[in-house]
Length: 389
Image (cartoon, rainbow, N blue to C red; front, side, top):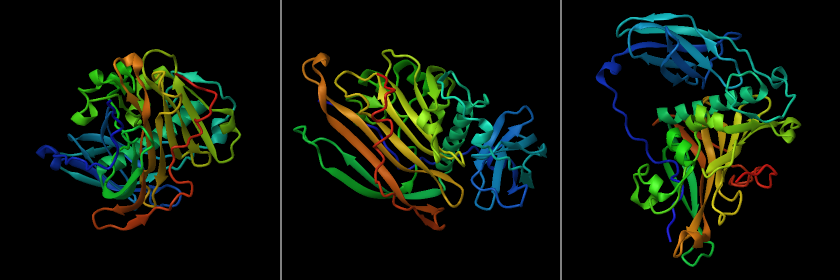
């Protein structure tokens, strides 16, 4: 018998050593302020664009609206500000001389995006959609992409230290349900699921058999059975994923007063293991609340919709975005003499909840409230009539 499950979050991030030339790079720094009332714009993604419009650097604005972007070479640059629920804004051009620092105050226009402007008039599925296309599905995907990108940038910067409660459950050797083991840890955050390169997912899908996954995993203990890869911002909004999945707004979402959902499902059924799921956004602010997914195209011994995961997102008082809860579930195969004899041995489950966040090594601690309904494995995807695989 062999099995492998998700590798999960809160491993310490490796240190990154920058080339010496970047340590004395030319810099655009300053504060982001709202154009209407000069209040600080916190938690915004700030992208440094060169004169041709290509990205050169990125970062997040601080609680006071501060930002600092280091360019790789002297030249003319603009700052693009991306905020969830608002139209993007781009500054004037600024020239950065060699090894210089230019400080500016940017008054950011605050053009809020509202669903009334998007006009929720259809729930028809769209395949091959692109963010920025202008219709409701593309607009909602654009806001979800912002949230996932800002969350990823928060993780990359590594300025937050999380105290988390995690759990793991595996069947006992005789196949009976195992006991849940729980632990508390402190460390930097990482994305809760490991994702493979899009080129690999396009060929092998989201579930890799041992012969396919061995080259992607460094941990020998995870090479014995199927490896379940999950989605992240890079995967969900890649051209490959958008081209091979269809997106829709379910009718119950259109009628909801508080949230709106975008469902995604594989465009076609084939031998590749895929995922379907949904993104849940706040109807008023367009902030991403939740991402849930289920694996499709799994072997017959795996019950339909039994494997997958979910994660919820939270905006902190500082303006930063984090994943505050997650849960993952994968089937464990019992392999006998041949693969045709494979049956379900049980499920491995893991998850976590962030309880405290420290801003910086000696910064303030933010206590996250406990959600009454506990872990978030149960999903509105369960019982859905729109099944795949």
